[in-house]
Length: 293
Image (cartoon, rainbow, N blue to C red; front, side, top):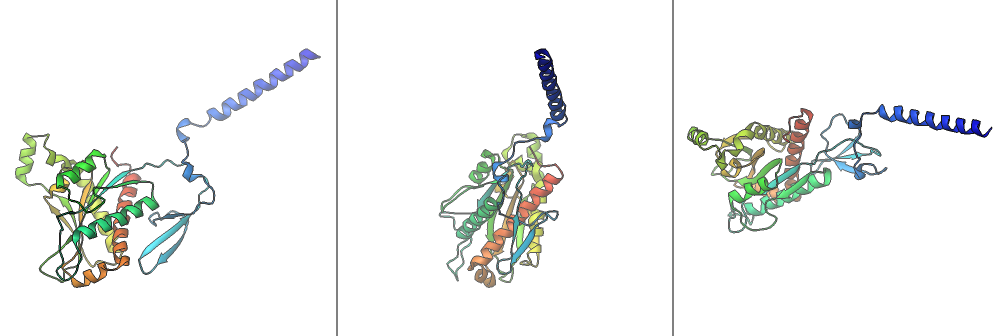
């Protein structure tokens, strides 16, 4: 009798072992990833940008600032997410005022820092991406220091922020720049392959894609009648080891623009335009699996 019970118990344990073995071996290990603790808390409501047309969410719009808010509910999200490093460069600073408006107290160096901080907050609050500013206060940085900062942190994207001025005070467009190289420079780079200024050449296609995404976001905002995509030999972009774009966000020589920039709503909307362009770009690269490692 006792031997029979032992045999039954052994048979039961052996059967249980085999069932568990075949059950767990049927799931490939590559499909299981460690969840993000922030993603598995039920009932969390998060603000997100509205860029994914496939997401089933309710959208609400703030008409004044032009902002869209999306509330998501996902109690269990085991998807993998890559965190990118984004470097935002507020142009000028310190003794370098940038554009100075004689009819107002607005300085370009103050506007670029304000805009950079607004953009940093938008990205940090709505994504998991890491956002760094080349300067966080009113002090001067050389052009090479700004680019070196992005390279040092191995940034995946570099965005330099500026405001423009012109004798024609009616101009009010946004200008988006990628760098360009002269034929003489290209010949020199072929002889000196380690030249620092040649770094951006391999990223020019990606830089153009980023510029196009910002252009799309700006046009969709209905704040700009026209956007100009331009190429210019900008030193601050040439040494960047990542997609790099410089944006002249508005013309400070235009009195109407100055009036708008004196409002929180307009400055926040400018930041939101840049935010949407960056997220459009990241989503597009991830969708086509062509983001650099």
